[in-house]
Length: 143
Image (cartoon, rainbow, N blue to C red; front, side, top):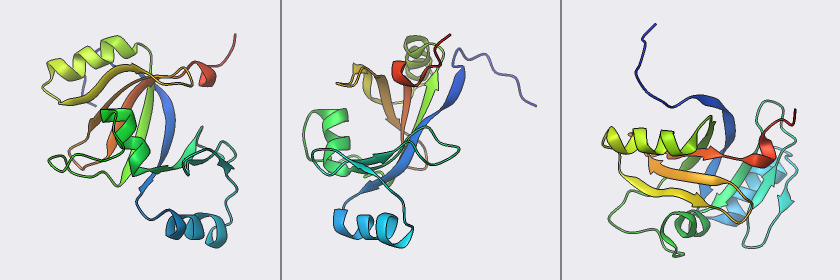
């Protein structure tokens, strides 16, 4: 087992899913073929918290991922287009964001507060996955 000096303490996977460019084709596969049931939000965002083992699974339109990272509906041509997204809820989002920056990772957005109250820092992993380190109040267990 390798020990690290980092300050990032992952608590759980907050969400995962594909980033879709052909909404109808993806919806056919996940809804009709696999039989998954989703809640539908404005703009084609389909999500569910009813799949055991994941807190949030969603088909995230590329335009919405671009909006979350860059404030525009179009993904920049000079940055590889991600095919999936993965969010890790962490103990301290601010410390995790600083650690990622200190390690030389290019943050697409840092400590952004989303409309649903989540704080997110986003970057592309070496594999091209859009990764978020997040603090999601609605997913934290109440004590």
